[in-house]
Image 1 (cartoon, rainbow, N blue to C red):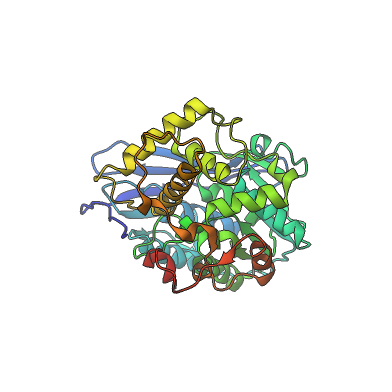
Image 2: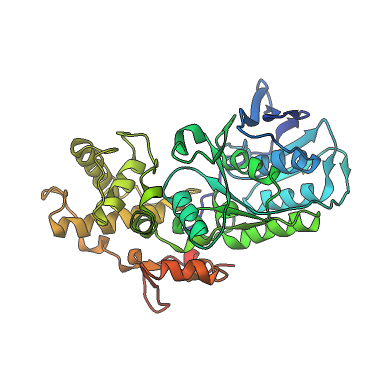
Length: 402
């Protein structure tokens, strides 16, 4: 299912990057954003209230704001204008400029940089591992498997006082904006050899232009980012081994293999009336896990009926930049079908067609990450088998990876 391009006009979004404000426990940049005939808007990005001292470096002054501006989720996302003219009140690193201008093009955006640039290589010592920790199933499974394999990662957690409150060793911070660049920045500042990110099968659809999660979830895109940093003297690499897993398998392994880490899982606000809460509830019920702490029976039925009605609506036939929803929705439908045949929480009056049941939800999908570390794969294979190429069902955007 292709990505729907945003409507465009001939204008530019003008974005001005102000000099960063740096302190031992904060780092922030103000963006001044304006459209034709519109008042200027201010957008603050960065981090504050970190529980650890931030080791600043000039490279992040170029890397961080350009990553934020160039990707879907930044100021061009959802706008009728897909072109940005960026100026900076300080010089930007030329290789970083070139990289993120190309990244913007990958997303179907255009970014022109009208600022002085400089060239410089560094010789930065890197050591250890950093885990981008969000508190839910993905980052908690990754924490468990990393420790299982002998790693001792820094646990770098946005809103960690909430999401990592069971992990006193976590390095916590708050963000001015909860988008991924803000959450990645502190891990980069620590100069680890490896940065680990917990993504799932839904985030790695490959299209041109890219969907909004591809750059931070697909191993091929992460490898490009790693090569940029390494070419500049930062021996840092990004890894996302769990992209091969449907979400229900992630939930299963977490609960069964790492029960202590599972006990602190916070994936949703308790009793949130959201599709995310329904998805979490379904993948837990599928593996006989309790959901009452975050979704009461009354709320579950309400969310379930709303979702089933939506899936029967013929207008619900596109995902746009949110291609991750395709895999999530199909996984939800398959689980609903199976639970209905078990008599497990699915009201009998709901129309659940047999075509909703799909076998791929029970398998590992190596097509999206052929470079997965075999040690991670061996753990996953204790709970699920690899999907065979001759099994039908998955969209080409997941099977045909770069």
